[in-house]
Image (cartoon, rainbow, N blue to C red; front, side):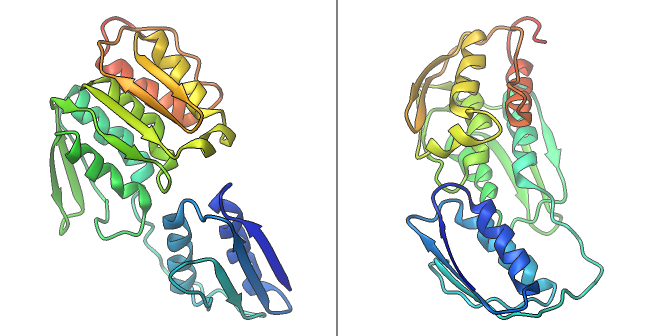
Length: 244
């Protein structure tokens, strides 16, 4: 049938419908209301569905979809791309604490969190990319504060906040209000834990303002959120003293 869904809460609801609707007994039409956030995640979903033989009709706005009924997924051998969301923590660790190389990263991927490469470059990190061999190498670097629009890259915010602590000057992260309804309130959680380490952070309704400053070890509460735990682990690599 016909479905209307908000686009400014989480793209995961839309992806879930796109995976399910092809198996329905009747055709499905989906209309997205409001602004569509995390658009690259929808693009990844559509790419994978097409790879497995599923037909979905949409346009560049990704605000409406028509899905024919009674389709079948075609089994095949499939190579899953390396995950830029997870690699972001490792690449940031390289910029903060020492050289690191991450492999199996498709530089032509539709993944939104591929933006971590551009963010590191803008901050002044020494970074080398090799599209042929699918590798990214980062060396310990002097970083500078920048402005970051998190509308399409919400999962990068915790680690970007850590990078900002090690950057000279001010970093502003905005358009990140949806992080308050993730596994934790990620804006409040990362702000709280980095402040324990001595970070200068101002928490806004939809973002963070961070002044670069030296960090010290602290006892961290990950707020039952893996991205907060990983971000704080990277922060601890360059901090003075022990973190646990």
